[in-house]
Image 1 (cartoon, rainbow over the protein chains, first blue to last red):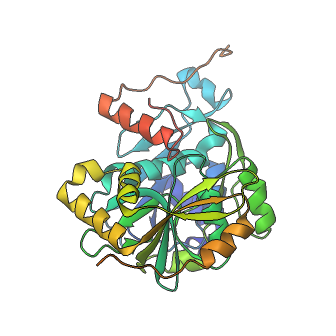
Image 2: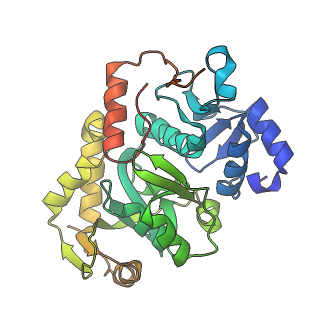
Length: 309
Length: 35
């Protein structure tokens, strides 16, 4: 059963009463909320995901509540969303209209702090013909915009935020999730793919306006198909820049990659070996760009990598 | 009444959790502030 097959009433009842277990590929995520607006957004963003109805353990348990506050005042005044993650409340509550980003940030937090069976890199990952393009990115580099643009034009989305490297064989496990877009990227992607579904834009977050793009259905369906890393591309968005790809020496690429890892320092020799292997197997580039059309053309024509002997 | 209703108080979190949240905020993985 996929989430989109549930009618809204059934979905709302499951989310409120016992939580809904979503099979997202590597992780089962249990979402629990009584917030009606969040039910609609979950239905839109996660429509294509299978439900895990085995009644087993969930990897992450995220509860999003709207607390009533002192004397019940928050039912009427400055309503808030707060999250409980396995009985912890790590974050400050936020205004209720930020419930969708809160949910997504909370799932990110769970993985980044717990999924140490993987070497985790903060990177978007896309695949074509079995070969993966890894786009590590600091905030503002244009990683998510680039990722959304490519995912909507024939590349398979593995993830917008997490490169999940299997230490055993170096393959990348997919974790397709909604893609977080900010500010001008929201309209840019709307023009790029007018039929793509997005959550309601939320203004006034720390980074401005945020909206989430539903991942392509085919990427969700193939959430258990791993890919082999082939290209490591560090994107740099620069207004008006002519598109350019510059090779990055492997040693430098290693340190840039390690810098983007959530758990490299914790994994010791396992982390070192996994990153070394990825660097050996991939060609690394810095990519300056200012338009998605240029990116699509240049990244689509990347030559086959030349593995280190 | 409630005109100055700020965030609800939350239980204190541990220092390493706070540090991880701050780091993930810097790189844009999450934007929520530590409790």
